[in-house]
Amino acid sequence: KYGADTLRLYEMFLGPVEQSKPWDTNGIDGCHRFLKKFWNLFAEINDDEPKKESLKSVHKLIKKVSTDIEAFSYNTSISAFMICTNELTQQKCHNRELLSKVVVTIAPFAPHIAEELWQILGCEGSVCDAAWPEWNEAYLVEDEMQLTISFNGKARYQMTFPADATNEQIEAAVLADERRERYTEGKQVVKVIIVPKRIVNIVIK
Image (cartoon, rainbow, N blue to C red):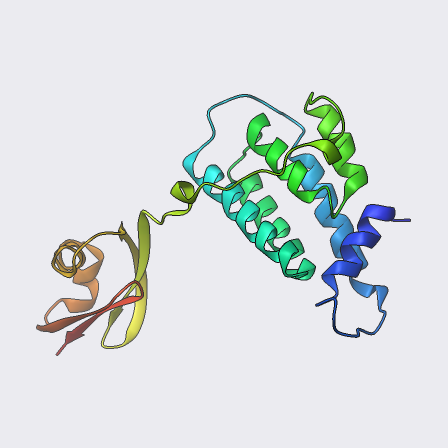
């Protein structure tokens, strides 16, 4: 009904290999849906320049799976594949080079579908003989951060800032934002509290 790759993924997705797990096939359909969604990434393969966020998604996946395999943590690898597939789908990424790296990475988990997709990509030989991809830390560096803007401890909206923005720059940008006026109109801003990489709380009275 589902195929060997779905079963392989599901068995690994159940939990850590060293733990005993009750056999339950209720969740197997989720793995099957994931593989179908993964397959759809290859519907319109192109050689366009990959987006920065797509490079980050793929290299983050390679690093995660490479580390997980060494630790026999296959269940978290499956989760990483699902997250990456969702991200690439949202980014409408169909780049041949990036997808070929993902196919090599998923081959130990779903070898049959990986072999089919390897041929669709136009690659030579077997995917099992391909060199394991290496991740580039340069693509994993966060260049932006999203902070929650709160007023007297109540979260109201979020703002994005450069990762290296100083507290002074963050405060100035928050106070200059038009949305702030809705919450501070007729009131006095007492102080601005910045919790690094998390939240900006504007105290008003």
